[in-house]
Amino acid sequence: MLGSWGDMKMGLLAGKVAVVTGSGGGIGRCHALALAKEGASVVVNDVGGDRSGSGAGKSMADKVVDEIKSMDRQAVANYDSVATMEGGRRIVKTALEAFGQLDILVNNAGILRDKTLLKMDEAMWDAVIAVHLKGTFACTHAAATVMKDQGRGGRIINTSSTSGLLGMFGQSNYAAAKAGIAGFTRVCALELTKYDISVNAIVPIAKTRMTEDLPRYADLKEGELDPSHISPVVVFLASDLGKDISGKFFLIRGPHISAMEIKTTEGVKKNGMWTPKEIAANIDKIMGW
Ligand code: NAI
Image 1 (spheres, rainbow, N blue to C red):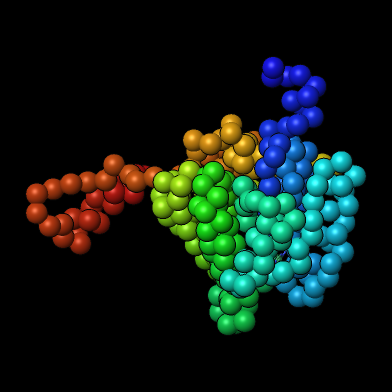
Image 2 (image 1 turned 90 degrees about the horizontal axis):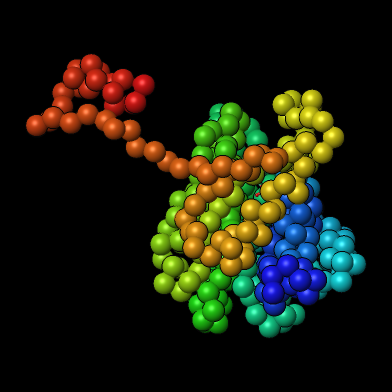
């Protein structure tokens, strides 16, 4: 019977196994705790570096594993970088070795190396694309392969950004990666539906080490835009409650949740080819202004 103490204790994700990349801090840590609270066993992956992706260490992932264990739930750490195919495979293997299965993948790991285009060098570009875009591909490829073989479906939740979907000054590398993740999400949703694997993306806005020095975060009240606001959407998508939703984008800013989509304007039509001057004359209608 729904609502009994037994169900509440078991949770929405009882018997499920989740990988959350980059869950040693920030939004990923909140996802790992929220998934565990609902009964999932969790692989806490994190390289443990700084915001720019430099350095490495085990303590960030270990701390979150300890937090989950103190909730009387199961967790194991993994310290591989998501940015290589081998890393993706090892992260997924950690789930199989520790818990024997994989049901949920949350691609969350990320770094920032901001510069305006003309000051952006190749290393800044490559590092950000590698962690966000290739990392999402590497982990998704490894996880979806296992989910298909298991034959029980699966849930994949990627992390995009308003920077990629709407644009943000100084973030051409990050925005390209995040917009790439959006396209990747749509295609994976189409391709994996036949295996009952859903693929969605969240577009979070939260105060973490990634954003805390932005001027617009300076006046926030205590707890406003806390990263824990993001995770209920991830739990929803990971659970049976969200099983029919795939290829969608959820914008989450504190307690405000909305969907983001690309819209086509009504546009203009004529018989035959438009001339550039006619296009200029119709630009308001084309743009939907
Ligand atoms: P964060 O810096 O606290 O978390 C990112 C985590 O990823 C860190 O724990 C880091 O050690 C880990 N990580 C970095 N490179 C890794 C790698 N190669 N392999 C494994 N782990 C790695 O930042 P935050 O804000 O929690 O970001 C989480 C995700 O949300 C990122 O993908 C970020 O781009 C995205 N995001 C965050 C927004 C925000 O407002 N905070 C806005 C839009 C997107």
